Amino acid sequence: MGCPGRPNDGFMFCSGQKFTGTDENGGVSCWYNIGVSRGRSAHGHLDWINEYRKGAGMNLRTFVSLCMLMLVAAQAHAQRSPSLEPGSEAPDMTIKEWLHGEQFSLEPGKVYIVEFWATWCAPCRAAIPHLSRLQERYHADGLRIVGISNEEKDVVEEFLNRNRRDISYAIAVDDRNQTNRNWMQAAGVQGIPASFIVDRHGKVQFIGNPHSPQFDNIVAAVLDDRYDAKLQAESRDVIQAIENARRMRNWRQSLALMDELIAVDPHKQAFVALDRFHMMLVDMDDKEKAYQYARKLRNEKYSDDATLLLMLSEMIALDPSIDSEKRDMDFALELAQHVRNIAPPRLEIRSMAHQARVHFERGERRQAIALQRRAWMTARPEAKAPLERTLQSFRDSEDRASSSRN
Image (tube, rainbow, N blue to C red; front, side, top):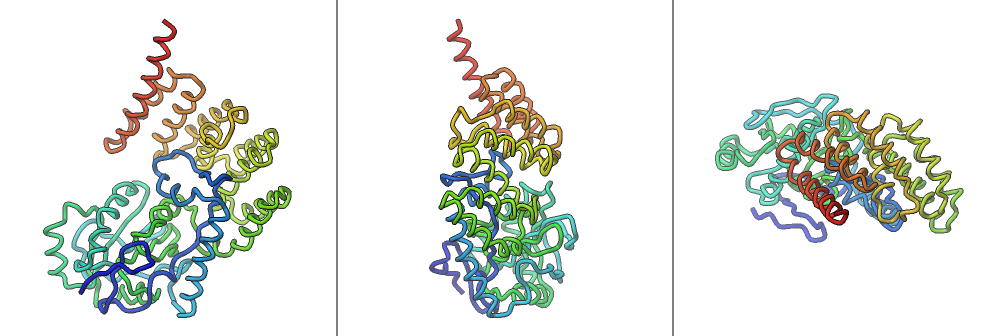
């Protein structure tokens, strides 16, 4: 059987008699992230979040249009009455045999990607390096991936014998097609590869193709517990109203609606708070009130949210849409220092590198070099290269400055 790419999908997909049901589009879900005005991203420079920066750097109008398209697909999916959809409790996996990697069951506190694949499917094979990179990158953050095939054990083992070194995640064989029925058929999905992302609370947050441009974005957001497919769908009317108010430059209504959206779930809607600050600073041109709001975020609602505060510091120091006279670099450094005090271990290197960048932007090159060198020395081997490049650029800048002084 061939594995033709479906026209109009934009990513690779296999379909055929080996899986039954409908397509994967019904499972796609909207996730809310208002990009700052001028279409720039509200996100920071963090390496770990770079993938979902790519999908989030859109203005609200673009996001609303994307959500409407997704909701049309979801409505079509709903007409087929799936029993498993984004927001549902994840079913159990019924595994006949684990053939490779770490064995596990779904338990609270970890994020899972349950992928259905086959050795005969070229797009499935093409997804292996991608999924392996995700597993290596996020294993310490609690991500576990399993690829489940409904083929015979010896077929999968033969494939593993040739490719085992290239696969960093678990591979298993379904038990009499039970997992396929409970996941694929229950969701109305027939195409493979098909991936289900399960959050730390045991809820399915995404059903779709791992080649989707939004896939890595959603994985990163789910790992940070900032993705709720059901919440985003329920927010669509407010999102549209915010866009309409901004288009009309009705700032009072825009601010009130943003506050309404944030109040529903401050953690998952944290990016709205970032956009609110940016709108006040750039669009409304009210520096005083913008920084009053930013300090309120730091002191109250997000005082222990290292990721949000790191993004806020980066926005103030580096966002090219903010004019230099509107940057409060003292506050940016204050935020960076606060983040390092509260950052979890997984953010240690990134928060250190960010503070180094803030020092550099303030003209404090020696402090920047010292911190960046510390970040480079502490980082894992696979993360050292970009840190070293930045360190060298800081040193080159200091050398040029020293030469000019002499």
